[in-house]
Length: 273
Image 1 (spheres, helix red, strand yellow):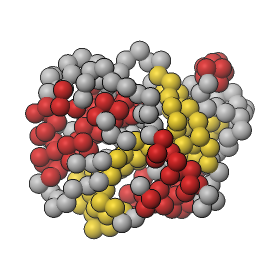
Image 2 (tube, rainbow, N blue to C red):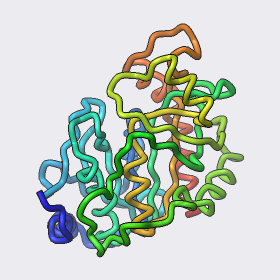
Image 3 (cartoon, one colour):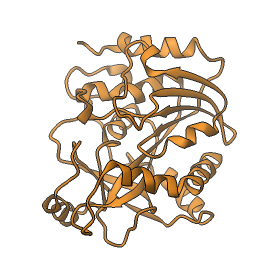
Image 4 (tube, rainbow, N blue to C red):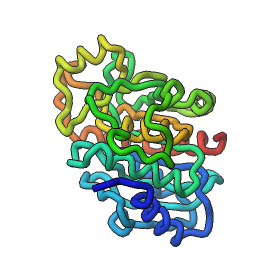
C-alpha cells in the first residue's frame, strides 16, 4: 500500500462533506478518557468504519467514532478511541489521524492517554503534562515513502510537546483538584504490561510514566508542524512499584474515579488555547 497524499485526502474529503465548519483543535482520547466526547455540543458523529482509508479501533474500551462540534467554545474534531501498534497496524498507518486533522484545517492538537506511573512520587489519578518522550521501538510513523505535503523527511522535534501549550496546561492546573506533574513518557509496544525489570530500566533512563500510544501521533504532528499538548492520566502504578497485579479493569476504574475533574481540566485548557 502506498500512502500518498491522495490516500489521506480521500478521508478528509469525506469528513468535510459531513460538516460546515473548520475544526481548529483536534483531540485524541485514550483509554479511560472517552467520556469527554460526550461534552461535544451539536455533534456530528462519524463511525471510523465509514471514513475511507481510515482505521478501525479493535480495543473494546474505545468507541471508535470521530465527533465534530463545539467544546468549551472551540470548534473541535475529537477522536473517541485511537489506534495502537499492538492492534497490528503498521507504523505508517498510525499517521492517519493527525494527517486527517491537518487536512481538515486543525491548528493545534491535544493527545490524552492512560499511563502507568513509573515515578514513585506519582499516584493513580494524577495527571502528567508530557514534556518529552523516549522511543526505543526502533521504528517511526514517518518511515518509508515521504509525503512532502505533510512536511520534510528530516524534521525537528525539540518542541514536539509544545512549550506554549504546556504553559497553558500548567496555568489551568492551579484551578483543578487534580495533582498535576510534568514528565517524560516512555513508549512501549504492548499489549502486555511491562515487566518489573523494564520499569526499573525506564526509571534509570529518565521515564516518568509508560504507555502504548501517543508517540506515533506526536511524531506525525511534529512533521506536520502542528503544536501538540500531551496529557497522561496515571491509572495505575507500573509493574513492580507495588505488589498489585495489573489489568484493564483497574485502568478503567481509576479513570472513572477522576472523570469529572479530568473533563473540566481539559475543557479549561481548551478555553485558553
